[in-house]
Image 1: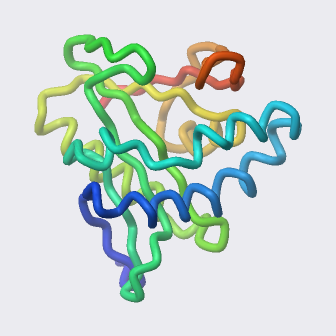
Image 2: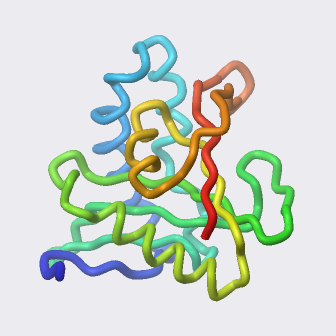
Length: 168
């Protein structure tokens, strides 16, 4: 049983703290899978908290008693980038763990909350666009690789990712 952090629902007021977590996590953890020329422009987009996620009620934060965020992640019905909804399919979104706190079950704990909420909402499957470095994490959660793909984060900012899927 964890005692060093609590998982709670994010709010719009958490934007600056989520930005700090994303800035600490993504450049550090993604550097082994992407070259600098691809990663640098992608990070400009990816290290900003998404207000629609923060206000969704399905985005969660792992927080220490000091107020430091050590993990985040959630899900939506809308497919990232497209906004389309496929019946009974949720989309895992914007997971990150602080590099000093990896391999402590934080991402798994947040995903567990996502999974329980998705089941309660009647979903049958989750999809995610995994970064190349996160594929093993999602694989450990029983996601299956569908295919590699390029995600256009902004015009002329493209990141290679892996489409993954699992039953809820």
